[in-house]
Length: 112
Image (tube, rainbow, N blue to C red; front, top):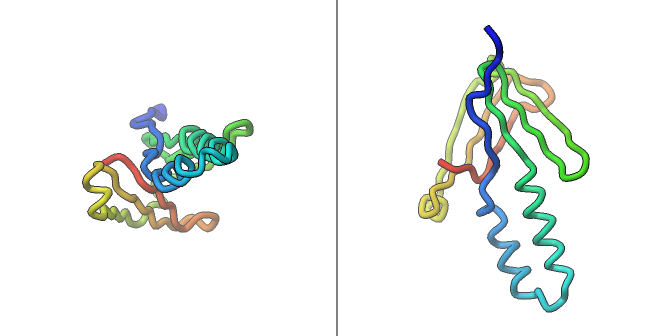
């Protein structure tokens, strides 16, 4: 059976909310505008793809890097949803794995 994509998406921009507020307060310095733009692009260009056999994480604005995790290596999944995240419908997802290179994957915040 061929590998099929089950889900594909990005993290929520809510994780940058504090940075965006600070950049808005200090936008008269011009530099914070570029900082906010860089954070937006980094978050937007980090793509998660869940297939029937693996989890692929592609990140990078100019240079793309793809990290894969075989699903049989996932040992435990934990979700956390603090009160503020609940109001916006996002949550943190943590994967505990038996993979030597990345024993812990943390996606924050993620659309619930």
